[in-house]
Image 1 (cartoon, one colour):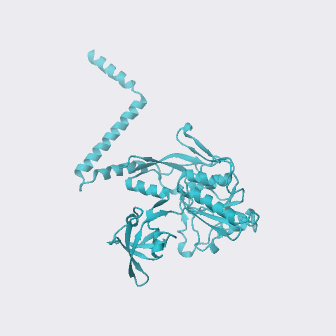
Image 2 (cartoon, rainbow, N blue to C red):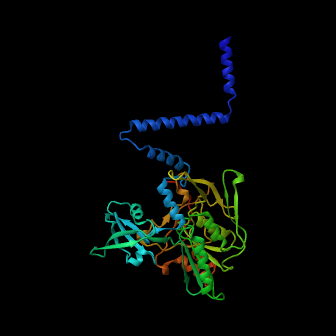
Image 3 (cartoon, helix red, strand yellow):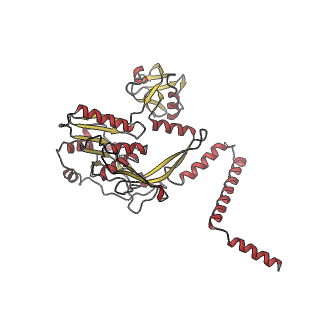
Length: 437
């Protein structure tokens, strides 16, 4: 009788367990499993592992299983990301690349310590502070050239076909990453190239607009070409500010998280800096994230004509969550964004109003396109009609840039949108559904 009563009492307690408590118990069992595996690796792996590296790898594995854009940044990666978004750092002002283990100067940036010292495009950097660059990764070499403003670094350089050795002693200065470049296109169009959205982007666009308005008579000014091809994105607030520069009113973008009360809407403030002048936006398969927000806002408000090829399709928002000075930060996908008309471009991209393909050199054919968000393993899904893969080639010779030429002709009234659409129909590919590799 006593045993039976005990059994009934125990059964009654199990039956009253809440689903939330049961789920929490499952979670704790899984954490215990993780602890067991962690200890086994620490004690039995063939070589003694570093505890910190094991933990960071476990965190990375957890985050990378969510989507391609969530990740853990160790302290160094977090600092590098902050440098990228600030758009300025202490350094020399050299754009470098690495070929077969050799660190080579792509170009010295105008009016920087490197250009004033006489560093030239094509120079090979053989040593930094008397340490050979052989065996260094590109990021390690860059780290050694960056440093406190006012400090000095020695560069060993090999120049020309004969690899003539030279040595430069250069004082580091404040270097700004130029997110915006501009130039007049002829004497009647303002061309604005946005390469990324960092903390300097809106001010760069604002300055470019002001200069064009000062230099080009209003009665002669045909409008703006905003080139965001191969722009990978960046800061959300900067994409909103750039959109606002060309809008008088209306929604720019909305972000929607897991819960309805997390929805945020961002609206344009009165004051179109461009004063209503016509705008053409250039995009391609390399245009992602913040650049898609700008293109989507201007397209939905019919404020700009979009020319080029379908954009990348990154329609999610990442929040950077610092984890303390010694622990880096968490990059976590927290929302999707939507264009003013309510479109989610996640894994679909923005279709241009006028699709124009570039003529690609034979040696680059097959390597001139991006696979897009829809081809990334683990991407956030967005229905059945996901699209991916779009041309991302931009000719280095502007006289062969069909998209740029079409934009200028459209603004000058030499052709119409309908004529451009019709003339490019024959070469436009049929969009295909993307598959993840």
